[in-house]
Amino acid sequence: MTLAPEVAAAPPPAARRHRLSAFVLDYLIFSLLFAPVYLEWSEKETTGAPMLEDILQPYAGNRDGWMEVASIALIATYFFAQHALWGQTAGKQLCRLKVVSSATGNPPGPRASVIRALVHPALFAVPFIGPPLFLVNALSIMVHPKRRCLHDMIAGTMVVGLGDPARRGGGFLFALGLTVSLLAALALVVALLTR
Image (tube, rainbow, N blue to C red; front, side, top):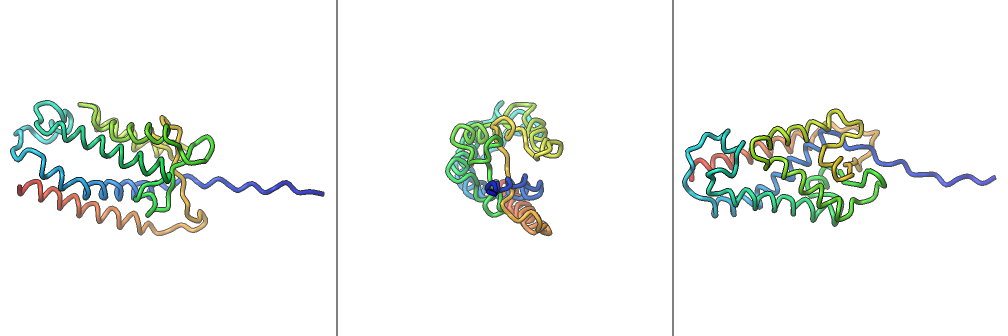
């Protein structure tokens, strides 16, 4: 009697808190890398427009609009290069997560990586409806059975946890990432306000 070879179980979908931690860490890393360039090249004068108007309509009358477009391109490149090469960004690696094809479970490949990398930051850049679209993208993780965001569904990817599913951590990385990101955001706001 021969036994069929045992099939390895697919990794479980990543925990929401781990995805949030990875997101925060990745944007913190990106912000720390890009902030000196942004602060040096951006206009020193403000437009005088209310902050909400600048967020909802980032390009109208904004002398730094080209920096917004450059930011989207750099964010997309940051995510694309790492997902295409390793299936994980620095933040995902720290949180023990990996992006895989939802159909095969293999690394996503260049096509899915570029779609995923472009959709995610581009949602926020759409004038007027960008922030709500970005929020819908983030909140879709709450209702999807495999915890996929809109950018995952569009690209045909999902994020899986690489840790032991039986061991549930206390959310240390979540707390650390949130704390560090809030401190970094505070430092950036202070730097922008005092220039």
